[in-house]
Image 1 (tube, rainbow, N blue to C red):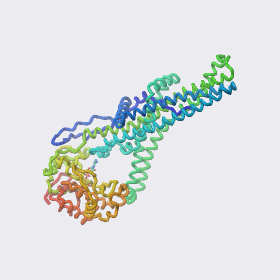
Image 2: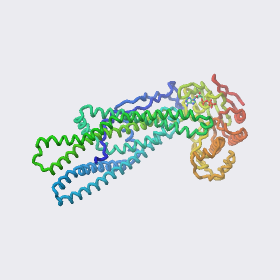
Image 3: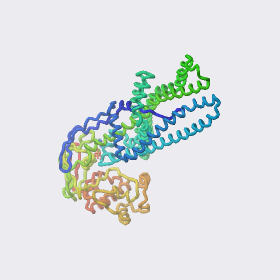
Length: 610
Ligand SMILES: Nc1ncnc2c1ncn2[C@@H]1O[C@H](COP(=O)(O)OP(=O)(O)OP(=O)(O)O)[C@@H](O)[C@H]1O
């Protein structure tokens, strides 16, 4: 049997690349302020979203290797590479010897030479043991290398993704499909495939030249050309299929996440249609991939089986021409066997070029998806990272001057907004649905860059002193303590929470019954979502404000599920702690906790005293 061996075609790699998405900010210019330094945001370079074939893929692969080397100790990687090369060479040598064994057996048995038979048998057993050891070691080193690569690439991605609102920008801009899939699955698949081909890549330069020449010799220019073409098409197909897989999975996750809402709406039929549509896309992409592989598999198999026949034709010609006239029947059998082995080995090597190209198409597809995400995160970090606001002290409060609020798609919502919120000068923002209340908060807190105008935010001890509560309560995995004190570190302050503090806090927000839960036992998000009603989740959110005691809190309809009495007592608790509020609310009962009201309309805004 021929070995499970592959020969890479790095030269074919140059044929493919996939390009970063076009991540342009809205065409309007905007002012970005940081510590009073106003600077104009430059237009991002026009990173093309189309595919190009050429050096970009190599550049991405190089980027990938640089990241891996920076995250793993070079000694460990070096050790693995040496292990791979030794294992590979050993496997090749052992394979050559095992392939020549049958011809020796033909000779020894044909001559009825019992004395030579036993040493040959021993040699055979030795080769089998060596072969098993070499292959198992090779697989072992491959596995270790795959784990190391996955660890390094995922760590690097986490650093880029979970920082300074990068993930928010990436997810909300929607330029990169399914980042979660890229991080969890694509990196894993890339690492496994790359580790597998790496052993080949290390000894590739020589093999590629040799087999391209062999391929050319057997099939002319058409042979290598079709291999390269296959490689390019294959990589594109893998990329597209992974994208469709991601969309399909996303749809399934949505059904699970919003099961209750869908059930209330009776939306099963619509959901099934959407899921079927996603399935159609993924199956279509998969079908294209299978189709493109058919001809290659056909040619590969043809060569494999034709190889045996060809090897007999090759040896038949000299035999019939009388070149081996002096050989006995036994010697002739031995020669025929050896010739069959060498011919088949060469043909097998040729088919490996195609086999390896298959693996490299996977590597190319996954590399494009992962590095593309890094490039997008890079451009987000360099252009939009951090809060676009000047740093003021606690007394200066929150100020916006001449602010133009625009959605990421460039839709203008609020023009020339000037408003100031001094300490104890709480503000309630009102207005019809969709008028832009939440968008004003997003712009104030730096999630959206303003199209024009300036923002000043209060800082205490060099840390932003504004706590933002979003419209949808955010529940995290962890203990009750971790739930109530999220995020674990806020501002520059460290706050200790004793059991008594925790009990008081629970009492204050009307969650005293949760005391029955073991405080420090961690629970999953599913557990918390199943345990806390929507109103209780909002109480948990307010508990976080009461725990951290910021000077300013920005609250986006974060008590909408509470009854008026509970809502009022929670607002009173925040006011009692001297927290200045900027609230979005439709409920008039809450106005009394604020000094002024900012009313947004489609035509502008008014600010009135309460
Ligand atoms: N990420 C986004 N990308 C593009 N447009 C958005 C985005 N988020 C909101 N919008 C649009 O901006 C407009 C204002 O939305 P916003 O959420 O600020 O309204 P709102 O006044 O808070 O509404 P509501 O009272 O319903 O909460 C809406 O038309 C909405 O479609």
